[in-house]
Image (cartoon, rainbow, N blue to C red; front, side, top):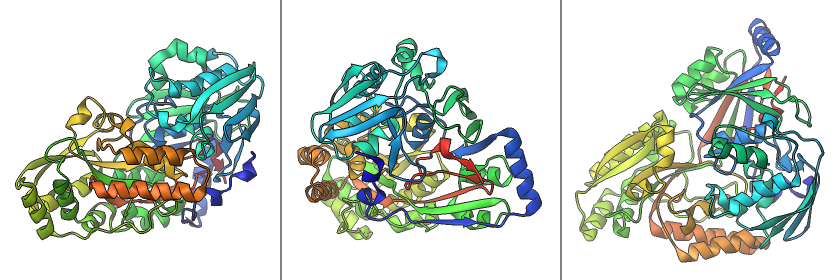
Length: 518
């Protein structure tokens, strides 16, 4: 297969609606900032939280994934701003049949840290560790169809699949789970790979000061095209207002900006902005194994008692669309006929009475951000009206991302969660299987039919049967009443007028080596 065989229309029913607004810069300010960037050869990008784990197999979300794709190579990668792919570490790569991919590597691709040059054994190690039960990697689902990787020569090999894997190129080979790690480096570093990148990518890790900055420098040993910038600094700024102020003050050059500030920032003389319909999913989940949330009437009452529209107004300034189901409408497999639940205090109170649990206490766990806090306060007030006392537990990123994982995950009650979306429906559903309980299935919801449908959809190339399976999975999730869908979000970004970002259509996946000067 080649890049032209995987076009955006194969993956999406519609593209992410993106509207770029580039304002004419004031000459003096624009020339000054452009000159500064050229003199420094670097730019500063804001990230929305601190980095947690940059091991490609155990990365937390797109924030770490963006670092992985910049510091590691993959066999193939997406072209700038596109879902068509091109060769990266591979000299040749071809899917010879539904279950076999053959590859050969370019010679003399050097790993950072003095760990030698890339071989087919490094590819074998990098992919096989995903399916090693002893390693228990967080993103094992990306390689669930992998049987083994055979080494056929120092620079050649064969990826053998147990079943067809229609999503593999979109969600794995070209993404962070396709990153090629130095086996020698991994053996030397062990768990330290979570904090030290040992790849052969366009950039190499220079400095990581937790809570302050992550700095990457252009990798002089990189065998591919030289990136435009000699250095990239990623600066964690959790608070949206602080991030907006940092951009206005010239402290950052690329940032996601708040919806409430987007219009004002678009008018700045040295800013270019973009607005995109999100492919993420944000929801409130309920732990179905924790009483009284194990009672479906209680879950139905909570779903009926939350005023989703009021949550969206308070937390997202009413500028996002309401979600009805897990998979966003841009992605094939979305359930277009999903119900939209209207709030009814009387119905919620009736359900609680039928469940025999009137007047109980619960806890809503959120990440400690301005948006989550605003959403949580509305939920808290809504639940109080139906007779539920809800405490808010706001956690910093490290603690939050551990909250739903075992052993502590058993005591989680309600949680406000975000799934950063990608380009295949299987990426959305894979986190809710029984196997993910204790990892990312924070609802601890287990449904045998869902698991069967998930396995079937993951290995069928028939698009109709595959999409039908995804709709059925979402119907089962709806029937469980364990999920209150909020929004698929709206993404708004700002950059300096001299900087041209490279973003994939979901907006979260940044192609940092392809950022350019205008």
